[in-house]
Image 1 (cartoon, helix red, strand yellow):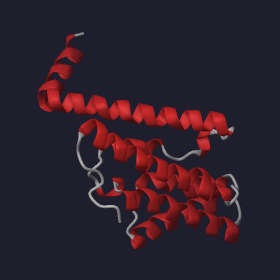
Image 2 (image 1 turned 180 degrees about the vertical axis):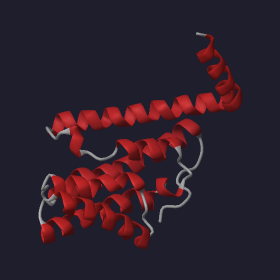
Image 3 (image 1 turned 180 degrees about the horizontal axis):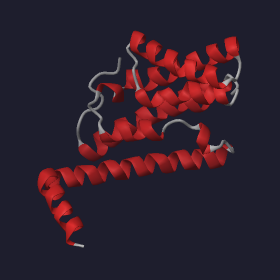
Length: 169
């Protein structure tokens, strides 16, 4: 019983009260954004498993200054990775090996275009493995990425009174 208390005390001293509050606010923001995704999934009758933003939310809200959390990477990475998935799907079909190749090619494409956003790596896997229609690119991918960027902008400006993003492009 005392082991977890010692660990908690050590963590609290390392993080400090301000860090703990910031972490709690990041958790609240992530929960609100995920709740919004859940609501969208329910209203649109679109399975949440096909909405690839949970890890993007954690990254953008929890580490807003990181390069992959900037709008260019957030929106561009999701678009580039999804497009790669569709190209591979069109050329190779919905095979496991094609899904793996699509993820690898998406990483290369995101790095080459300066839109590296690690959470977007799930998009080509979803596209190829589930033989998704092109409409997936627009909803939920484009719409979701833009809405997440807007949410992060408002969240940082309103709650934290800090600028976000460091740059748009």
